[in-house]
View 1 (tube, rainbow, N blue to C red):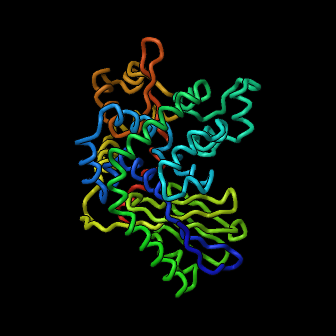
View 2 (cartoon, rainbow, N blue to C red; view 1 turned 180 degrees about the vertical axis):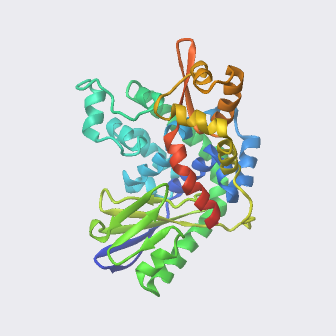
View 3 (cartoon, rainbow, N blue to C red; view 1 turned 45 degrees about the vertical axis):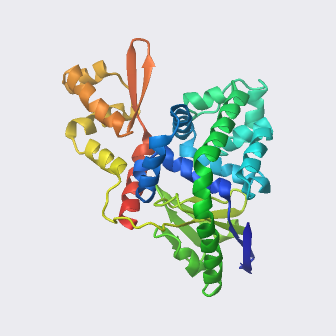
Amino acid sequence: MKFYREEYSDWKIEFAYSPFFEMACSLHVLSNPDHHIGRLKWAENIYKHIDEKLLIDINYFGKHYYGWCSMMEFCEASNVVNSFSIIEAIEYIETLDINQFVYYLLNKDISINTIKNVLYKKNTSLPKGLNDEQKSLFNKPESIRSRLINCLKEYYYLYFQDELKAIEPLLIRTLKRHKIYSEKMDFLDFINTLHERIEVNKTQFHFHKYKRFDVSFDEIKKIVIKASTFIGPHLLIGLPDDNILKLTIRVNPWETNPYEIPSDLHRILKALADQTRLKIIKNIYKNPSCTQSLAKNLNLTEACISKHLKVLDTAGLVYKKRKGNFIIYSVDSMAIDRIPMDLYQYLDE
């Protein structure tokens, strides 16, 4: 469902309701519920009743495919994905050209031509920056797609379908109301109201996330605005690689305590509030290492190093990978990058 307002500075403005997009946002919450206080009780209730195998699949795709955010990219593949029927959207993804499927699942970070060359063995070297599970996608794309489709269908029928019935009227009313609201004021002023970390000047949008993203007005031909009850506290944007800037209205009809600290943020800050753990992170930042090497470098016992690594691992600040008889630890740079953003999200709420 789409609502259009008059163009602004040659930009087409579209307010769009997408049930599939909202389901993808809900899966993002389930993959890291501690971060979304407004939806924490909902997530805890789902966790009490959800099938164990389905939860394993939800966590698998959340962990290895951008916290389910790449699933939102499928909304660009066809209007079918944004229809009122989530099952039609899933069935479309099920029959999507396999090259396009891999392209969207990898968050559009790798070109279609590169994907084709790897899948059809014209180029056997995998693109850099992929984790091990993403690399396996190129060896068995149909198998992973089948696992994803089964996960989506089961989750929709058993858990999300009833939730959508409750929130759908609210989302549609919110989009209609914001369309009218945007027409009663300068559109750039309206964009400023969508999130505390959106900044607008005369020629650019500035989006403050883990780093600042700048979007020139000249890059934009269309702005699409969606709404979600799940995406808070995030500033969710889609940058205009196709001249379409995508923004999301945060809808929170439930009362929350503004001083309640997300437990994942608390774990991270607590993990960093220790000199030994900071020294470990500095040691493995550029040179991944094992417990034995760290103990030698820092002049500490292996037991002491293991205890601190466990805290860092629980906080999601390090990766670990077995190599022969050793487990090699490395820093999750993206987790470090997200700390200022997560802190600002807490302050903004």
